[in-house]
Picture 1: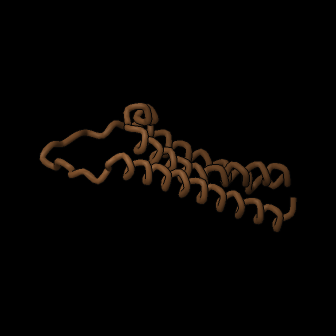
Picture 2: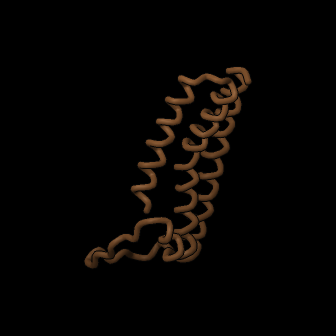
Length: 116
């Protein structure tokens, strides 16, 4: 795999991820507004937020769809790092494989500790 080919694939991957994320968030936002999401918010009561992926089940449909879109946005650069790791491994470039693996481990650790 040439560097130009790898750059093209990575660029397309990032564009597709951002476009998909924007479409999902926009669909969730439209659904939220269509369902009457313009109501007033009661700021006198504190409602703690649920954390983790299980919160998708607890959220109303439009908000869950928006969260899925944001998760797709977060997953896009992670997919780029995974693709880079595979591409460097195919090129047998050990230095870049090690650096990319460390970056991937750091990404997965930070995402994992924030969501679970």
